[in-house]
Length: 496
Image 1 (spheres, helix red, strand yellow):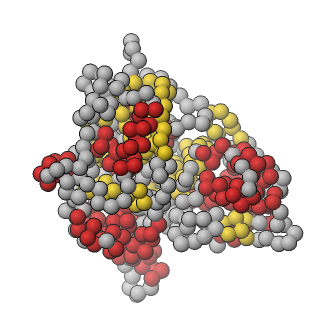
Image 2 (spheres, helix red, strand yellow):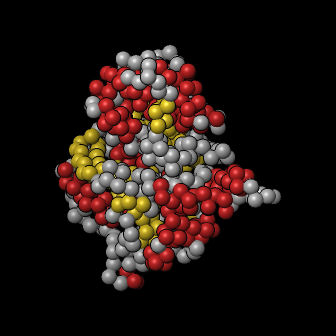
Image 3 (cartoon, one colour):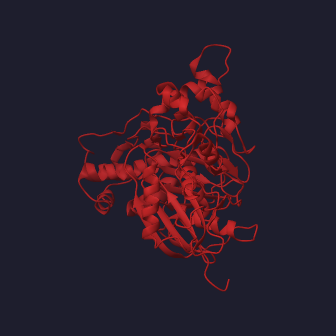
């Protein structure tokens, strides 16, 4: 390339929108902008659009960007009426009110010679895993659709299309939105698009067969005559932005739109992960994600068998609670993150018998949506600030060890561990992780890997090669320690 070609990666996450303008050849950041999203588990999607515009402006605008892709939080349910209006606030992945619907949908596919609930749940879980690669928990979109159908029938009756946060924002960037007439609305809805990685988290898409399962959607909504986003191939372009005021104003032909994808798959792509690599991302949620050439069907229900953005698969285990565990520890002890780590280093491994079960907002792995957090094993002797601080850090790490064990149980190879996310900034997390996870960890340079993955996908779609561009990833630190298995076993005892 004789002149610099720019692409943009957008990360519309739970907490904020990030826009990374990137050199398509080298993968280097050229400009960057971000804007916050409001707190909550139920959000008006218009906030995502406003945040994208603000982040794009902070990034110096997108007039010179030749291609763009959006990575977004998985599972969030966006319901549109026949004119493209948002019907109700989007329920996000961490909105657990649909736990009863997850249970009832699971039982609905169960088969048993008796009326035994446990057996029905087990066979129902296996049926869902075989159908879509993943069990149903409150995070999955289809359970939220069922909640609306049961609790807001007037809204359910208005549903003309169902999409996810990345789908909706991509659609708006493409130049679509609410229309004045039903006919115009139907045309606009037909332009919704997604990719297989995000679709695989809905509960009504089969990532192995690459097809929607509208029969399953019918179980939740009572009908399936709704528009679902077109699922694009890994490097298939969705088209161009309709408005040069959004992006590509100074680029011949405008700004090309890539399929985008779910945040976990995009982070894996941004990290250039290959089979044998596992990333543990400590953000709002905690995610242990691997790359597999073949689908993984975990009939126990511990793993989610999602798709990636390249045509492979992302078996992963996800926790609702991650970096916020450290937030809670800081709040409880009235310290900042560095002070929490310093205090924790003053206690021995295992915190003299204290374990934190860190299910502050319920939990997804293990599936305990109504559970709460608790400190276990406290005595008059061991209840000290140092032990409590250590228990908070170890509770976070043991919770992620649960996810690693779920991957190992299904034979997923774990040859290299990559630690990313805001929680990885804690010196205590980095130092103590190898002892609890049982192997060395590598910490890539702090960066926005979902946005990097989205930018890399945009460059891939823009280019001529069947292979994705090779962008180097800098490993800044590698941590070693002797495994301390007793800490995890102590946690398992109290968790049970």
